[in-house]
Length: 429
Image (tube, rainbow, N blue to C red; front, top):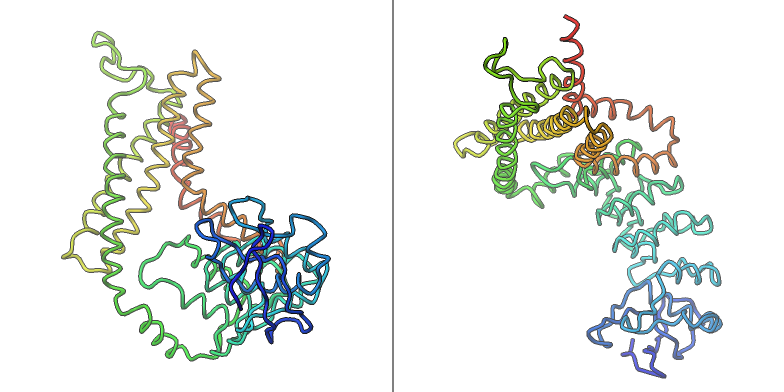
């Protein structure tokens, strides 16, 4: 393919006939759909998606004349149409153009999945006329789902997963299914349970996606050869960095809650009182709940600090250090929940008698901290469950994951239950 030339202020290219383009294309000039960088017009990204687009425009000049925005010039001019609109136009005029491939047998869907162009992938998945390209395999035997799992973009993957026509267990020429690729791309050693790759692997497991024909011992050997040769060193680096970060947070929480325990809202009774030196608001429900919240925050953060100290000691075994780190990170999260509840209860205790609406507003705003603490998980669950429902049905999905929400409530929200239940129980006895 020759270099682009400029004609009437628009960069164009002369297309050579390629075996993977539609036959009958004439060697003539047409507006180019290559993305031209700002720095230099000659710096072109030869994307197969735009190669196919340009070929179609050459074959049908009416498409290029239908609207002025159909032509693509430099980014500096700011009139580049979005890729999904371009594809929509091409599919409308040439439905068979969706099957055009590059020299490696990839369709535009493969390229979009590789580059995490979720809008393009979502458009292809929701367009019934494009269902026939969803499972097309390239020269390596990879479908768009293989490529999406390899790239690790959750939204791109979910768009394909939500279409029941997408086959989850097709094997490529290496005998790998999307489930094999997902497992192979999991990081060795310690990893974040809410990471994109972990959620992709979990989703494929829920959908009963099968593994390929590779023997497990061969798979394990290849995995260790590719990623496991320095996994211990990587785990030590993760332990060191995580311990330092979490330790700062746990110490700060312990310090704040220790001070709040003795700087009580409402102050203390005078010495000449019958119960001199005791808290003025003692016996009130909100005050008792505040004390329970402060105590939980201090205890959890203090235990987490001790655990983080052990996880940072090189003399302790690696497995023990991992256990200390995981336990401490959970306790730090719990202490954040308790500290937030203590703040809201303390403010409500002192403000409610004189400014009830303000006290309620501050307490509700404090809940944003708790939501933020679990926001990533809830957003990913909501997005994934919606796509799983399209494939499996909502009832099946809810029956497949019945313990996720109750388990999350028990693990991360139990301090709230204790904080508000204990004062009510203690007042009755």
